[in-house]
Image (cartoon, rainbow, N blue to C red):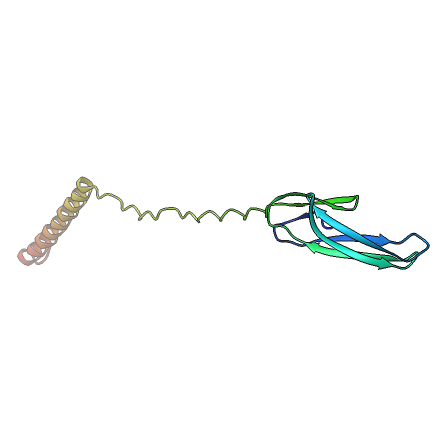
Length: 141
């Protein structure tokens, strides 16, 4: 009985050697049983000293163990459940998209900088204007 283990509906080969070990031609009926239930029989007529191979293919759908007998000879095979399919791949987890953080505007500092720039600008303006005025009033220095 080969193979010893199959999946549902897979074929199992059962081979039986029928031999006439006597000195005269003879007939014989071989009966194959699976789990004690007659499956098939074969009648053979063999010359003295000859042998014949009987090959059968059987399959079963139900998972379980099956005993095979042919007139006192025995064997077995098992039908096993097909392997479970591999689990699906986990979905790809992408990190959430976080928008870039804009720095907060520090209004007091910005106001102070703007105030200083305006003050320096006015100071330069008045200094330049005064020199120009002095140059007009006192052309020689």
